[in-house]
Image (cartoon, rainbow, N blue to C red):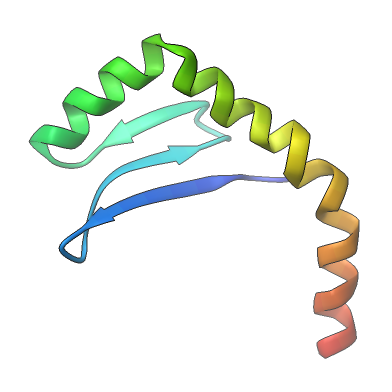
Length: 71
């Protein structure tokens, strides 16, 4: 399967992450926890889930073949 992970970093510290396997945003700092709660309730979550369908799945074969060509 395909897994989309999007990390948000500020001052070299990850404060929030979206993981398509988990299916939601997870916060790692006080601000990240607040953002994750809000983003999981709103359109941001639907948009991020849409990226998996819109970008990742259609391009997976292309990227995978490029990786194999380089090994």
